[in-house]
Length: 398
Image (cartoon, rainbow, N blue to C red; front, side, top):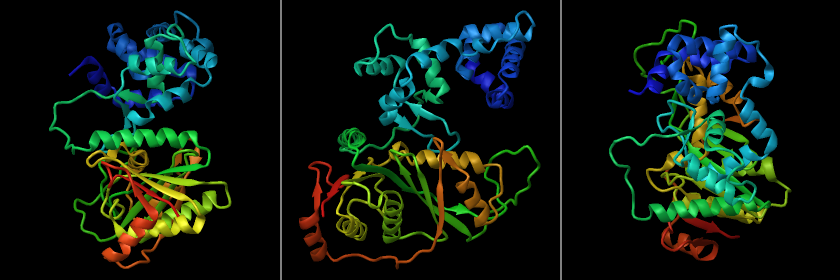
């Protein structure tokens, strides 16, 4: 175990308190106290943990030891000046790494991981034409990435991820479509996913709380909520449609239409692009799902494009980050009723945008399908598929 890992594990609670401290002077004193307690040789580790330069950590030590007076301008001085000089830097960084982000599939942390080195990110920023080689150092860029909560994930020796032959081609298509979508002001881009059912009752969710909470030692219940999430990739609005039983394909179609009506009705929109995984209820060959989307396309006179992530790679779907945020928020609490569960969702914000949360009832029968002859007519008339990845790239044109 590295020194960095030991510090994170041994001082986990204190580090969290320091990061959440809003008083800048007090925060610097606490960092200085921690540095003295651990030993000044661990300055580099603390620099990575708090996203500060080593110079700032040393000044925090001096503040704690009363060797200098606190001044507001010393906190993250270099990074602050850099952000002031390049006001769009954070936005440009997000655009560069957007397609390389993934969440922890176990939802143990809300942190997002990017499998790009600082050098690669800097190279792509320079290619935008806004920056030069001497605009900022790799160290400064790394501090900014840490402050934005983007971590470089270490490659672990685990079982290899399953990968089908078309995986690379599917990812190329996803990246291409994202680039197209963000350039087109008439295109709506959303990411959708159905979360695993959330059991309702006095059950432990393996979280922690500062007050004593007792949970039962078994989970025998049929009461649950099944959230269906929609994340608007351009205006960052999160939608949660919650069902008390498993929603059908047509229920999901209704949610998509309800979202579109509330957010984009009577606006100049030419296409709805949907990023999703190839689950059984919304796959690229699910006839009832496709027919429902065809009806939406015809009703609002828009194209609908389905852009699927490769099998076994759903963690790259942006809406997965909402599930990570939810798990972090409600772990440590007992979700005894659907009202409690819904209240957490209603209070969730994503990039300063408040969520829309609804409780729904399943409207349609399970197992509905369309016969092959009728579906072939719909395919020939309305659907175009990308060669080589036909199940993972579907365009519906009214």
